[in-house]
Length: 137
Image (cartoon, rainbow, N blue to C red):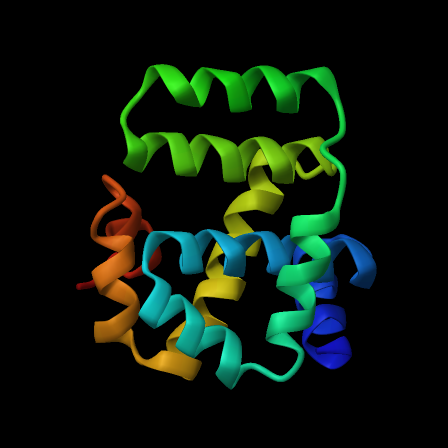
């Protein structure tokens, strides 16, 4: 996982420890969305379970993160999960541009681990997300 976190961190423009935590948050999000596919992904990526456990144990930082997390209760489950993930990542200091790069990098890793069809069963539940990840279909 150290090599993966360093590579993604370099691509996104964040430190390897920050990338590691961000990867853990995204993996936890995917497992929450679909336990079977998310669990398979976590099992197939070396160190996957460890980064998820670290992310789940990490304290939430910042009032904005808490406010956005609370906002999630006012919207549907699909949007609530996305809002919570976004708030956790932005509270770590990631910009919108970094979030986009991070999503593309982590989902490319996930696609390699479980395959596009499996991953797309999760991403298709998030409005517009599959088109963002795979704009050419």
